[in-house]
Amino acid sequence: EILCVVNIQHDCASSGANCGIRNVQERQEHIITMRLQQLVYHAPTNTYFLNTHALHNYQHISALLPPDIRAQISMPCISDHQAVRLHAAALVRQKKASDSANPIDPEKARENDPPLAFDHSASKAT
Image 1 (spheres, rainbow, N blue to C red):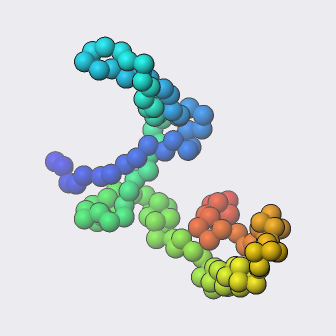
Image 2: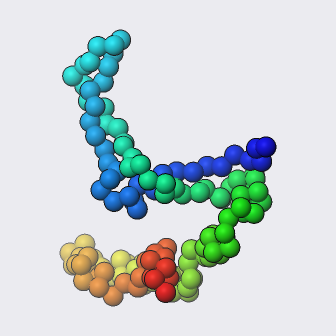
């Protein structure tokens, strides 16, 4: 019995160098042409993303997921909204203060940046 349809996408990033793009000669009416077409090739891994957002059948999918994965889905993307707002305001003030004659060095400006708001790599390690 089929309960619902799911949307999965291959996780090329975790497959490392096993995924990539290759050039293939196009065919036109069974004749190979000189034009090249880029194709994505996937490694034969069983690593996929399960798209659970904006689905009408989320309750069926959620019932099948292990509790630790359900906890990751409910984790907010931004853990410290205040820090993100303060950082954005500081960037706006910095941009307004700089003149076209005296631009800010982008490398120096990035040294004091807080971690990215949507970067969960630190929370995964803990």
